[in-house]
Length: 118
Image (cartoon, rainbow, N blue to C red; front, side):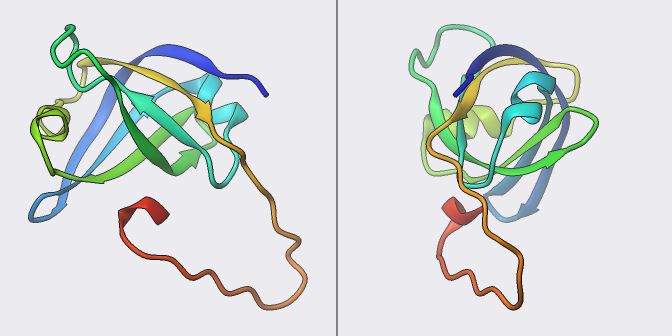
């Protein structure tokens, strides 16, 4: 399964609710390879502080090479990520995890909770 490290341009930063954010990145290789159930590891800033990336479910992939993540601010790393502005660079590693596909033959029910089901 291919995985890519991309220096991605932040295209949009939205606050959807108090402490809940959605970021849109230009990441064409990740977008082309992503499957449902996969995630990315995102650098929280353009520098090395904090050092470790954070894992985020892929919220949406768009055909024009855009990848969206949805997250709640819970600590310093996600607070820094929430401050990303359009045009800023972030490093993404992905798609990671074991993706899946479901046969669409009739009705489906998806049950989950929290923002991890993005």
